[in-house]
Image (tube, rainbow, N blue to C red; front, side, top):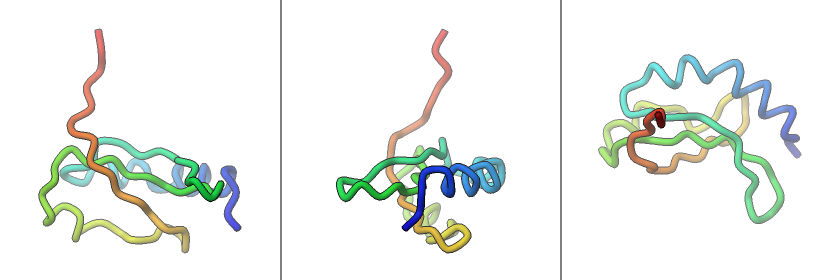
Length: 75
């Protein structure tokens, strides 16, 4: 079973690469109802073409995609 620390390392390794992809608004780690951590990629568009160009796993860990819309810095 993956630990949060395992996924933090994977997130650090791939965040910059993922954030360069069109439609990717953010990357984080979430805890599922089962208690298992998962890498979550936030998308700013529901365009299915965006999702097909992104990985389903990173270093063997599953990736979950969620639509959050654009993320903007607050003043």
